Image (cartoon, rainbow, N blue to C red; front, side, top):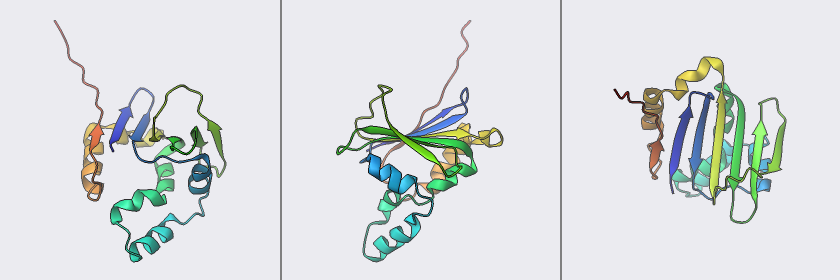
Length: 155
C-alpha cells in the first residue's frame, strides 16, 4: 500500500494516487455522487462498534472539502471486482461516471485529480504539502511520497 502526492504547476493540478482496494462503479456513484451520503455518521458508528480509526478513508469523510480548493475533481478507480472507471464533477451537484479507456491502468487503487482554483495554487508548493501531510497523516500507516520536480543548471 502506498500514497503518492503529485503536484503539477503547469496544469494547476494536485494528484493523489493510492494502491488501496479502489472503488467499483457502484461505489463511485453511491459514495462520491451523493453529497447527502453521511460518511461522518457511518464512520462514527463504525468506530463505536470497535472499528480501527485507520479505516477513516473508507467512509468518504471530508471528500467534498476538495471543492474548497478545486474547481473540478476527477477520480479514477479500479477495484478487483469491476472495470476501471472515471468519476468527474465540477461541484455543481452533477457528475459523470464513464469507463476509463485512457489506457492508464491503475492495477488496483484510486487516483484523485484536483484542478485547483487560481487562488489556491499554494497547495502545489512543496513546503505547504509537506506541512499538511505532517499535520494530518498521524493515523496513516502507509508510506506517503511527494513527487517533486528539481531543475539544475549545467554550464
